[in-house]
Length: 405
Image (cartoon, rainbow, N blue to C red):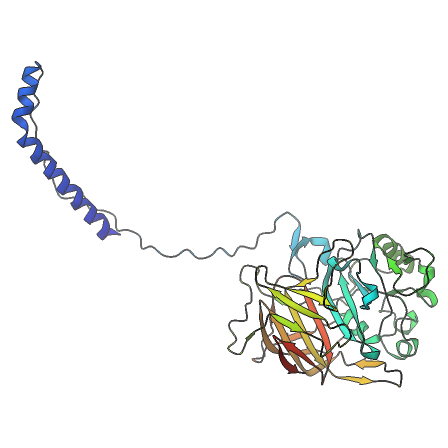
């Protein structure tokens, strides 16, 4: 910077000297002209040119460090524990719902999907699968569902969010015999649920309605925020998180302005298309990556999976495929999944890339943790998360490449 300023000074000095010389050479003609006009002649005097003043040393130019301030957009807003998005601070205090959504073709679309923060798909009997959404900020929703029956392994997936579980029945044999039973409240008092059929948790709670009214067929059971709130109060359920809940970010999140691109992993693969037909042969769930917003968009049966009210397609910042030990329980094909484990693996997708991970869960209310092959917990990006719980021995396709689990 100093060298540039000195050079510029010398250029100006040279111009000044040349200008003075030209004026001196033209003195006579100027004087004559002024005499002819009766004017006063001014002698041209060249000002002495001294050495330039010493300049302060120029500060060395350096690139500005990026500003990493994480300032809430409004007073009272905090980062959501499940998505890392900005939300009102009471959202981290209030319990979410864990809603059992059917995945049958004739049951589409469902309502309330646009309020799902974490979405699960797990196989059930007959090669069919079922979905469970962790629904936040649900109080103002005018319709949630339709709602179908639960399987006990969904309960173990749900408990780490400390939700009120919303379902419409389930195989009573296995729900009664399992420690996480929900059809009999006295079986395990900490599992709080609203069930559309059977016992104290059934219609007496007043949590559900039918569309159309009076129907008793499948895929017609719904609820809404008002019905759930009243039923929770009637059953004595806490609206805010209970003491079992850990109460911290559910996943390890990367800073919003420093997203995890997975570029730091030498073995990360670019993956734009995730095809789960090898895991869920009926629904053929799949996701397509959108470069413009960095999200994976979900399809079912080859069609966009959308929310019934907004029409918006489900989209996720993070995707997990979780390989899980499972067994067939009986001749009817009911399954059991081992949702507590420390020995299984899977894959993590974000920002158009995929890495291999290992997962661990050792307690009901403990979040499932996902680790890279170096043993470091994986950082999720801000936004919603899709979790596919898959039986060992099935496969999925990543950009057409078959990967066995």
